[in-house]
Length: 328
Image (cartoon, rainbow, N blue to C red; front, side):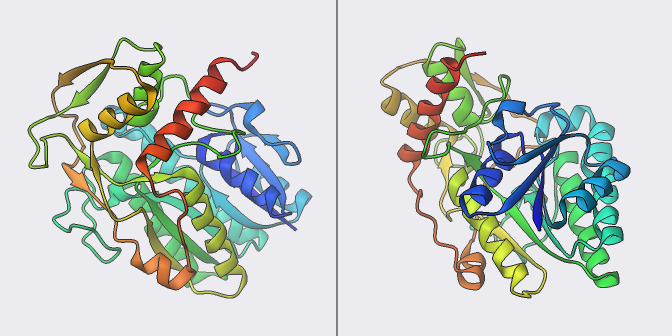
């Protein structure tokens, strides 16, 4: 039996494929390579090029490889882009996810892990924010993820399907063994952009808003190392296999850093004092959002091991150097 990883040639999905293989699992990666990379699919995983919304392709893969669980990572995820292209986000993140869920139901796949986002909370007043907080997303990206959460809950009530939804906070860093990291050239993630700037790939880093009601006026986020995030996915898979009930969990450390604080750490770790430019706020960005992650610690026994901003930055910097020197 196999685990299907949609978007498994990308950043987080690729790390999931690595973790599954490390655990001795049979892994099938489905990716259309629109943002992923064929080389990012780890050796030992079956690779199928295709779209997760293509039901004929998906159901053929499930039957061919004996898929018993799905970990779904195939989504568009840039908040400002979603504001300017909402219909594209609703097509990819919602309509195609609906097809994927139906394919799981039709082929008898009973376990589904969904990568959601803290963006479903929107401009929350909770600090930190727990899973029971009001869901008021302020961007099409956040709304698209919430719609899929609703679809999964409804499908699970109507069919023999159990799921775990993981609401990511800000994911960063790279595989401690140096096998994979964030590789998209034009990625907008702060730590990725900052380490690229430190290495001379960009002229400067932009800070979008310094007039928020935060410690220094810049946005505050909870940064989680990708390896800890994947450990949460593996715990979720074990939970479902043991007959655990459908559930939703935050994935974060419970403390935040401002954009300016993160930039200072990147400068210190890299030893480079690069240029920082101040820009206006981006539409759809809340001032601050930090996770309450007590539920996942208690119910899944999740214990992060990489909860250190300097460690996260250093792993991202090391990966960026590897990526720059990687043969094409």
